[in-house]
Each structure stands twice: as C-alpha cells, then as structure tokens.
Length: 384
Ligand SMILES: [Zn+2]
Image (cartoon, rainbow, N blue to C red; front, top):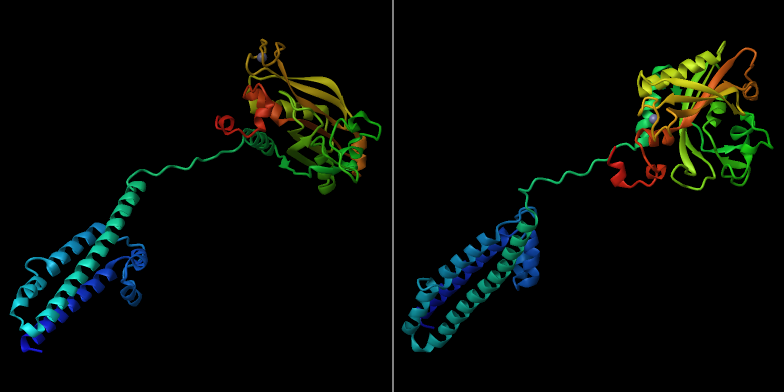
C-alpha cells in the first residue's frame, strides 16, 4: 500500500472514530425513556447497552434541541466543507492500485454517517411530535381544578344542633344498639306481650327474638343500667318501622330521645325543659303548649306543640292552618320502667321525651317529601 493510501486510511479511521464519539455522547444526553425507545428503534443497541443513562428519567430533555444537533452534525461530517468532502476530493490523488479500495472506504463512511443520522433524525422527530402532544395535553400554566368538598348531611346538622342545646343544659349524649332484644325494645318499656306496639306490622323482627329498635326509648333502659340516677341523657339515632315509604313515611328514620331521672322531678321540670329547648331551637317568640296523651312507658304522658315559626300562629300550609306544629311525645317515666332497671320509683322520678329528627328537618327546610333526605341525591344535598 502506498504511503498516501496509508495516510488517507488513517484519516478515514479518525473520522469514523470522531463520529462514534459524537454518537456516544449524543445518545448519553438523551433521557432514560428515550434511550429505551431508541434501543428498540435503532441498531445502536450496542452503544445503548454499554452506556449508563446519565440523564434522569424525570428530565424529559428537549427533542427540538436534539434535532438541531443532528442537523449540525450532518453538516459537520458530510457537508461540502467537511473532512469527508475533503477526503472525497483526494481520491484522484491516490495511486491507481489503492484507489478503488480507498474510494470504497470513503463511500462506506459517508453511507454510515448518513444512515445513522437519518435514523436518529427519524427517532427524534417522533420524540418532538410526542413532546408537542404532551405539552398541549398537560398545560401546567392552567389553574388547578379544585376538588368538590362535601359537607354534613342536613339530618346530621340538625342532630348536632339539638345535641348542642341539650349538652348546654347538662345532658350527655348516649348511643345504643339498633338491633335489640325483646327486653329493651318492649318489656322494659312497659310494653307487655300482647300490646299492639308489638305487632309484626310495627317493626322488623329477625330470628332469635331480636328486632330492629322501633324507637330510641330503648336507650333509656341501657342508660339507666349503665349509669345509676341522677342522670340526664339524650340519645339520637336510627329507628325502624314497617312503613311503606311515602312523602311522610320511611321504614328507617331518626329520632332523638331524652331522659332525666333524679329525686323530686315533676311535670314542671319536663315542661320547663321542653319550652327552653323550643326557645333555643326556634327563637324566643315561639310558644309551646302541652296536650295530654298516652304512651306505655310514661305516666302521665303528653304531646308538645310549638307555635308555627312561619306564620307565627296565624295558620298556614306548614301548620295545616292550626297555627301549631307538633314537636313530639313526652311524659313522666312510668314506675314500671324504673322498676325494670331496679330503680326505686319511691325514691326517684324522671321524665322522658322524644321526636323525629327527619320530620323536624322536613318542616324546617319545607321539604315536600322526606324521602329526599335518604336518597343521597347530590343535587338536593348541595343546597344545605
Ligand atoms: Zn303556620
């Protein structure tokens, strides 16, 4: 081989090496996901396998910057003023014997440059397009969308208000089971076996003599067993009746029950307590009245009404023209109920009261249908 050929050969080698160095460095600057995609796309697997990813995956890089660099490299390695172009122009100066072989080497080198750069350009072009889609999809300059915050259910809000009033009057809040034995739901409440309240039409029975409690009065018994008198408790909770749902009935509803047992408690304490509750709940201008009534577990018993807060007693649709709205039942705890939990009715007396929370809720918010309270329709609940 002529000395010229050896010299030009060395130049071809050096040029190839320079290109490979550029390629290595360029591939190393691509972030890791692009590395992986490039690996499957391009025959540069050998490089990519050898090169540890030096750019963290979270740095997405700039595909448009890559495109510019590929174009610069193409000009540098294959352009008219490139070393390759210079080598090509020297082919004629190679001695005849070595000329064909040298020309082949130069052509192969040029082919390699163009092939690799083309593939890289194709790959980066796809990355540019993907990056553009991504940028348009996630516009980080847009303000965030605030998640919708919920709030407490209207029945819960009302229950808490009732609790607050009684807690301020020295009552504690009691809870009790919703599934009850015969003793708590009936016997201890002075509802003997043949009493109509025990009708299968009245509550839900399970096997083993258990039933869903038909009133929160059951908590009276639990409370008196747990704490001995004197005691004052209120017990809000769910109760169950075998009612067909309609605008004013639901088989599950909420009640609140109150109980006070102490020495020397009379009807006057009961009337004063309920009047004070109504005053704090509905305002000082609302009046109360009491009517005699009957419940198995109280004696004497009464119903409490309050003057209509809407028409102030004149008569309207809400109070059905009467000027009065029924609050609920109450009375002096029956001596048999006290005896059922081993409290001596000669020493202690007390009163109990209760009413439906949903019914009160329906009135206060003027709902035409109490089933709205249980359907959990967000369009309804949002209004509170
Ligand atoms: Zn009215």
